[in-house]
Every structure is written in C-alpha cells, then in structure tokens.
Length: 589
Image 1 (cartoon, rainbow, N blue to C red):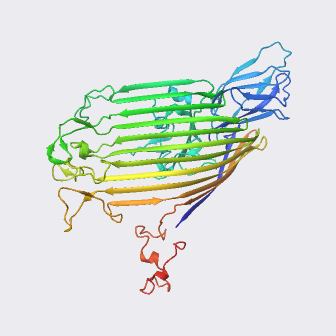
Image 2: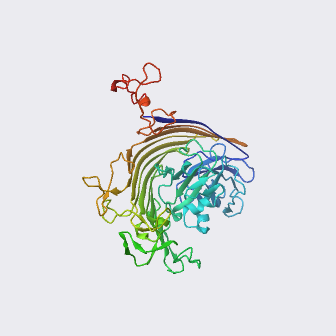
Image 3: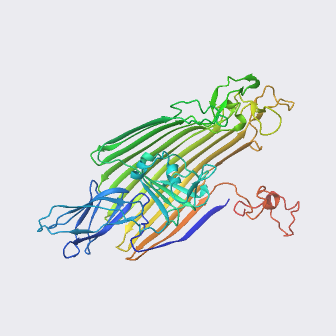
C-alpha cells in the first residue's frame, strides 16, 4: 500500500496599486470602503452600508472603514446612510467571486437642499486586484453570447483549447490537470479527471477560470481551476422558455452521405427556467431543465444486418453520431435567521450517445452506444459569528455512471462476431456486432469546513479542512465465443465472459480517501497585496501499487524479487529464501 502526501507552500502573490484578489470562499466576493463627510472629508464612524434587497450590510468603524463579506457575484445596489446626512445610493456595483470591490461614499449634510444622491457605478478598465491570471464571465455576458454549452464559453477564453479527444486544455496542460468546481465543491470525475456532469449556461451566475497561481484553498489542480457559481433565485418571480430546432445541410453527399435529406427537427432543444420567492424573501428557489437531441451529420446505410452476411438490410439511413441529453439544476436558499443561512443545490444530467465507427458504416446497427448519468447534491450552512467572522459547513454527495454496450444483456444471442466485407484490414463489417462492453461508476462523499475572519483592515484569514471518500467500480469486457466440452467454439455464436484474470476481462473496485487542510492570509496595504498560504494534501488509494516504484518493469510488481527478501544480499533469490515466512509485509512494500 502506498500513501501519497503533498505539502504546498508558496502561493505568494503580489499585486501593486490596489486591493487584491480575496482568498475568500469560492462562491462570493467582498465589498470594502470608507464613508466620509462630503465637505470636510472627515471619516464618519457608525454609518450604515447596506446591500438593497438582502440582509447583508455593515457599520463603519471608528476610522470610517467598513467591510461586507459573503456578497454573491453580480450587480448590486449599495446604500450608505448616516444620521444628519443625505443617503447615497450606488447602483450596478459589480461584485466578482474571490475579488474585493472598493466603493467609497461622500455624504452631504442634510442642511444642504439636495435630494437623495444616486450614483451609477462604472466598471474599472483594469482590474488591479488580480494576483493571478484569470477570466470571468458573468450571467449578463453569457446571455449575450452565441453559445449553448459551458465548453463553448471556456473555448472563447484566452489560453484554453479543446483537443482532438474533446478534452479542454489550459495553457497547454493536460485535460486531467483541471479542477472543476460548482459553488466551491468539486465536480471533477475522480476516475478520468474530467467534468463529471453538465452544467447549463442558464444556471450560471458567474464562471471563473484561474489559469495562474492558486490560493491554498484550491487543490487537485495543476493547469487551472474552473469555478462556477450558480443562481439562487431572487425576491421576484421570473421564468423563461427557450426552444429551437434545425438540421445540418451540405451538397457534398459523397463525404456526408444523406446530409441532403433535411429534417427540420433533427437537432432540437427545449429549456425552461423558473425562479422566485417561496416565503417572502427568506426562502427562494431556482430551477432549470433542458432536453437536447441531435441526430448528427454522419449516417450509414443499413446495407447489412448484424446477424449475418446473408441477411441484407433495407438500406435506410441510420444516424451514427447522434446524441441525446437531459439536464436539470435546482437551488433552494433559506435565510433561517440573520446569522444563519442554508443553501441546497442539485445538479443532474443524463446522456445517450453514439460514436461514429467507420468499420460499421454498412452495418450501423452493430455498433455499441454510450450512456450514463451524473448527479450532485450540495448542502451549505453559513453561520455568522460577527460582522467580520463566519464559518461555512458544506456536505456533498455526487454519483455518476457510464456504460458502453450494444445490448443490455451480455449474453444476448444477437451478439455475433464481426466479419469484414473483404479480406485485409480497415474494411467494412458486413456482419457482426461490437463485442466490447464497459461499465464504470463513481460515488463520492465530501465534507468541508471553512472559517473566514477579517481580523483587521490589513488581514483576512481563512482556514479550512476537507475530507473526501470515494467508491470506484470499473469493468471492461470483450465477449468471446463460448466453447463446448471439447474446447471448440459453439455454433451458432454464443457470447461468453472470460474470467477476470484473462486479457478480455478487467475489473476492479477501489475506495480511495482524501484529506486536505489549509490556512491562508491576505495582507492588504495601500500599494502592495500579499496572498500567502499553506496547504496539506493526503491521498490513500486503498489499492495495489508497484512494490518497487523504481523498478522499470512495472508490469510485474509482484515478481519474486519484489515479493521475497534477499537475506544474504547476493542479488539472487535462493529456494530457501522463496518461502512464505520471508515475504515483504504490506508496509515494507
């Protein structure tokens, strides 16, 4: 057994000229500033600064400074009020995840004959508070973009490309080096390191891509972090229904056979969204669902049936790269009391796809399909101790399953071995079916605890721990012909699953564990910002690993020299040394 541990020290970022990116919870931002007398510029202690339509706000300290934590990303209206002064309203103040937004107020005495002061906040041309390379896309921008998927948004960001395998790459890194997060919880598939489930554009409040250095609160990433903050619903009811349909068309029918046969609903999409309050503004909800179907653009003539070369097909056009997907996202936010807020999220998606296989072009009903589903449940409880200190407890359960097969029953008698149209390689199959099957499922339970405290004007400290328990089941099977008592294949073909020890059958079940702890401090001065943190990661695969990691022949990790001790040190294992009593223990391996 081998345990992997990682200690990360560094994450030291400097920013000159303004407030810095906040090492704050990955789902919200922070607003800071001062409240002054508009005539004398004297600081006003005890002034109230509130976010309209919420319970978030703060009072200025003795030096006129204020700080508002846990601010959701988006545009907000901020109100500053003080006895004896006209209040000031700032509209459209943009708050970004993990960033600090500064807004100062100059209040005019009520003795002046002026009405309430309304200010429209502008967006800075340059964000001085970035200590790492990143990109952000708000819900407003997504609404205006000609995109349908999260992947389309990411591909438009600098430094992100999509490889031939369909995976995303940040700054040339591997697709498996990206951490995918929703509301601060990982939705990374721990088996293949991809995105475990689909997130719809309509549910995104803000999308953040960090491609430079990471704060200590982020783990399991090398190339970048993709963090999505979802919508929670507001104080007013809102709804939306979107539907569209279309088809692919080309006159190059020699390459794209049957592409000129138009079907106006070959590709169709239906999505509905609703949000609003359930109990005044204390309990709000958000719900969206989408169904997408695409017949594809690659077809195969049904010239042959899988059951045999003498059974000709009807030559009808069969879609060979079609896809169908259903997804839904929901959120429920309950303001239990002023210091206590509970938020619950659900994300789910299911798919059923076919991947084009040129060998089966004339026998399109013989190729296997791909189907699966994924779901994530997140419960987050935030408890505010004081105006500058709060903690968040998050529990998450995620599951996803992927299968690839032609028939549900592995012993279905419709399975037949493929047969080429002519001799040689890279030919068409005129009979037979795809005999490969695979199944993989992953379950994860995640628990997080984060404590955030604004100690003073200069220091904001965050500490946290995270525990994750996984369950991974994996099986690959290539069906072979069953044999009779004489060792001869049974005719007609009868599918058979070989033992696990064979090359045609792979199976494993693993229960890996993860643990992480971190502490970080954001140190803010007038012209320099320092983000410094320390992170500890622990990983236990709970599985078999090479006995000797330095052995170049990794395919025989349980070879004799890695199993038995060389007692006399001569480099040769004698018969006397190859006994059960002389084996390495699990710890020694």
